[in-house]
Length: 182
Image (cartoon, rainbow, N blue to C red):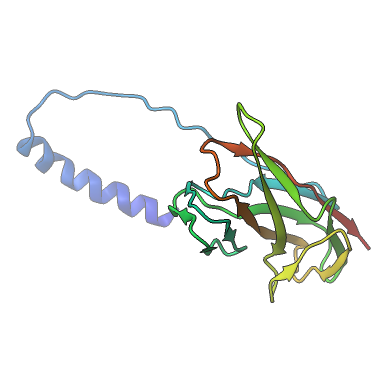
């Protein structure tokens, strides 16, 4: 509050100088900005962003592209990730400090399907951004909530299997992360 008062005073002192320097008619405009929030219920898990492998140029050999939980992109083979638009999936939960939660996947692998076609790419090797990063599978893994407020968030990365000369297009799919609070 105090900082904004000083800012208004400083701007007020500059306005007469600015008016002398720029003697153009005033014009007012309105710009709308989308605003949103996410209220996280206690003992829940909320997905707040999807896993995105970004744009990739397929090559003549079978390849992999991995997006880590910390959004580091690596690849093997001839596929070239262009590095734009990659993000790990983002999740939020809310329990109690020191509470144990179990996380697991509904399936260890999923298929991404090309929009407008039947071609697929396999996604597997899901990893949660814990310390240290931990593989997620259909077997529950226990974690302890370390935040005093009970709020926690984590990211999930995975590996995409790109076929040799994979057909260009947009590939989509989904995976499910399950949670149990103890």
